[in-house]
Structures are given as C-alpha cells and as structure tokens.
Length: 254
Length: 254
Image 1 (cartoon, each protein chain N blue to C red):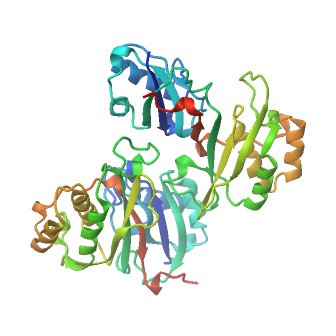
Image 2: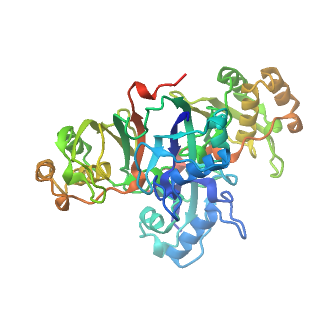
C-alpha cells in the first residue's frame, strides 16, 4: 500500500496530547477520524513521537498506509478541508514503504518559549508561552551549554515510558537568535528526547535564571541522575515540536 | 479625582468589540467590572476608540477617574489579577486631568496580517490572520502608496457612526519590514480612522493583490467616494490596534 508522510501542525491547548485515547480528544484521534471519513475505512496513523497534553507542534511527522484505490485523493487539501481548525497538514507526500515516522527519525527540534515581563502577559501570546517573570538569561545560557553534548539524561526523564537506555546527544541548546522584547525562545536539538526531557530541562534552566539553583547544582543533578532533586517540570504550553529530521528515506517516492 | 490612563491588550476573538453592550461580553464591560470589584463602586472607562467585534489590540488606551480614597491601589497588578486572561493591562499611570483617551489622541496605528500560503493555515496563527492565499504584494504596495496622504476616505467608511467629515490623513500604509514566510503585516498609521476604514482598505488591497480590481480602479473608488463599488470588507481577526499616540498630556502626572 502506498505510504503517505504528513507534516502536521497543531495548537495543543485543547488536545489531550498526540496519542490516541479512548475518550479524550487527541491529535492522532482527529487525524484517524479524518482519514476514516475520506477512505470510508479505518486507518492507523503512526506519529514520530508523542507530544504531551497541551504541547504544540509546527512540524510533527506521521505516516499511514493508504489503500491503493484511494491514492488519487489530494491528501493535503482533503484533510485540511475536514480537520478541526487547531490541526493543519503542512505537507503531504508519498514516501518509500521502508520509511517509518518514528523509527526512521534521526533527530528532533523543540522550541520552548518563556515570557519574561513580570507585570503582564500579552493575551495573544499567553496560549504559547510560560510566564516566568525576570530571569538571568546569561546564567541560563551557561547551564544550557553545560547540558549540550552526550549524557545520561535520566535525571531529566519522567518515569512512565520504559526506555532501553537514557543516554541522549543534545546537539544544540541555546536561545534562538533575534529575540526581542518580552519573550525568548530556547531551541533544543537532539538525537532523541526522553519523556518530558525538554520540559524538565527548561524547568531547571528557569530555576537557574531565578537564582533558585546554581549551574553547579545542575551539573550535580545531571551526574547524580536523580530526578527527585530536580526543580519542577515546565508547563506544556510553552513547548512546540518544531521539526523531525530524517535521512533520505523521507524523500518523495516519485 | 485622579485620572488613570491604561494601555490595554486583548485578543478580540471572544469579545463583541470594545464598547459596552447590554448583554454581550465586551472589553469595556470587563474593565468596568474589574474596576467596580476593586473600588466597590461603578466606574466609567473611556476608550480611545471602539474596536469591532473580533478585532485585537496590543495598545488600546483608556482612562478613568479614580475615587481619591482608592488611588493607592497598584492598578496594573490589581487589574491583571482579576481580569479575564484575554485582556491585559500593559501600562497604568496617573495623568493630568485634561488628558482624555479619545479627544487627546493625535494618531493611531493599526496592523493587519494576511496569511498567504494557500495550502494550509498554521493553527497557532489562525486566530490572528486573514487567510487570503497567494497575492501580488507588489501591486498591493502600489495601491497602498496611492492611498497614503490626505483624502476623503468616504468610500472606505461603513455607515452607522455619524462623523463631521470623512477626510483623514494616512501618514504611512505599507507592509511591515522583515516579513518572512507565510504571512505579511500591513501597517496603517493615520490621524484617525473612519468606521471599518482599515478593514475596507485591506479588503481593497487584497482584491488588487488577487487581480480582481486594478490600482486605477482603487483610485476611481477613492475619488468617487462610493462605498458600494468597493470590494468586501476584510474580516476582523487579522486586525490589531497597535498604538494610540498622544502629545505631552499623556505623560505621567507625577
């Protein structure tokens, strides 16, 4: 069956996350509903990874196998016509059938946005930021540099999902250049992320920026690999999955 | 009574506009409710101008007169603590008592954002843009330059509000520099605006960008001052009141 790859954007506010749930509204659930409507047949959608309840995406990737008799459907147009307004298909293309949204993924990029003006939060930005007040962004950047590299990130993992090992390589962790005004966006680029790893690191960076913990304590936390010592997890609404990176497998099939 | 000036931001999506309505939820209504709660006494809030249902603001201005026994209240903090999350007070300061949010205003700036990628709208941007598909922005800029200056803008006015005259001076009307990707923001700076003037001009510019009407026809429309010849009004959600400009009166009182 022809394999279709989608790049999907969503506002996470009104979703109980990516993954299908029996009762709650999820992104995977809405996509599978849309495919079922268009194909008059249930289809399984495979995501590159789960995003938590309330987390946003502009570049989530998923794939599904289209029944051959339906492969003439202009998927992007057809899906966007019936999907709810908080999900959009940004790209749709047939790919090689050995492409897998999750297993072929080589790296991911997340962005976490904090609002730093203590006196108010702009209502237009509120759904997409964590309001933290004044923070020392220089200190945060020092801690971020320390977390860049290959480490056992067990201390930044929430339990719940069994994983074979907790070593990950963070290629880049720094504020996005060109920030101005009342917010800053922190970019996370790694070969993979543990459960709530970005939000746990961000909670830690903000604690550093608020002088609640020192950069040295972050180092001890990382080395000790003990989650219970860590500051609180950052809330979901500041987080956005920007991009999932693939090798050649993800190219167009024809 | 001490006169308080506020700079207010709001997401217009769930408001029936600025102006108080007997039944509908409005920005003025929510602000007056908040003042009444804090003062235990009704207060009248005077806005710089009405914004239509669905229109946003990041720099609306209003004033109100505070009972002297309440002038110790830290207004920004107190209001932001009880206002709904789609309104925020960005600034609050006492001003001279001859300052008037509406009558002292010397100029206003609006921004109108269009989304130009025809295949999808990013859900994060949908509440704040008008999705117009591909448009010829060069042609739009030519028409915009033609509308810059002092003219009788009667053809770009919706009826309903009696005004003494319909001549306005547009100081600046052009796309905001630095736009990238799938949207562009058009800035409108004038000494004042007629009812729905920005949305009517924007409807006209987009019609030019879609090759539905020519730049010459915009000129004829302006000169003929006949609204019924004009393209449809642009929808409210792309519009944002950026700034209201005052002279020295708006400075702090002490």
